[in-house]
Picture (cartoon, rainbow, N blue to C red):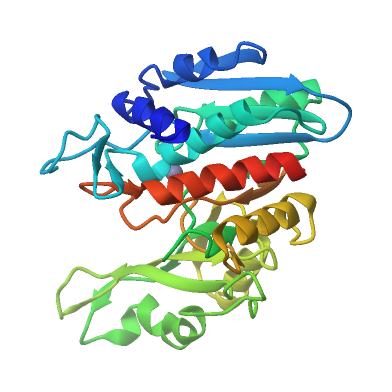
Length: 365
Ligand SMILES: [Zn+2]
């Protein structure tokens, strides 16, 4: 059994449901006696930052989360014990993302030297609120002027086989609610009432599905998606007092919260309305010619023999915080077909390849 698989087995055996790190961080720290270790603990969340300066040069931070979502019922194996079967390791977090953490931990142990400063950041709060996780550590590093230049996060990005997808950014998410006010009335006397549904009817066509941009090589178009619409009392003889429409925009870097707000305001011109628009996560993109993307791309090609696609799809991860703090970040990891599901498992071959990719990145960086 290879070393990286042994590390993975230890990590899986520790019950680390968000925000409990389950002893994983102490275990990892114990493997790096020559790194400076610092814990950032708050609100039940633990974060471990390990750092070593090998020489002059840029600062690369390898990052990941040790927490997992609850196991749930009906597992064929015990979820907090790594069970090996037919070339796979079964257990909660095997794909998301203890295999990624194991790959980082083993690769850093196996390199002889590094060109610059190397750090590792592990959080126990990625699957939860993420309030006291990566973002809190980055805020502190920023105050000290110690933010990394680059980051590699080993989240499970691969779709069909390892090496097909590298993530270089994420769409943002903007939520909005617009309420059109009218005056309730009897359906037989429409002139005595102000019906907000009728007032907004022709504008609805323009609102639903509106595209703010055309997308590009890395992003889908930023589109307004209506998520809820309601007004009235579910009767046929009273016209509604107000109409409330909720929507979401998954936005690229070409569209901002202000663009969304302006568009809806413009559309509601002349109506009595209220509007709230809130950005819950920001979009970001790492330049595909930046060092981390180029080095990672080459390492994936040579280890996995694939042509990785650079994308921004999928749900959020801590990479968004790296992006927000100006850290050039890329994400790469094993296939994600069983993340958060029952009988989560990872292919041993994929974990060994991921380990080789991380090691290759460190050697070439
Ligand atoms: Zn994850």
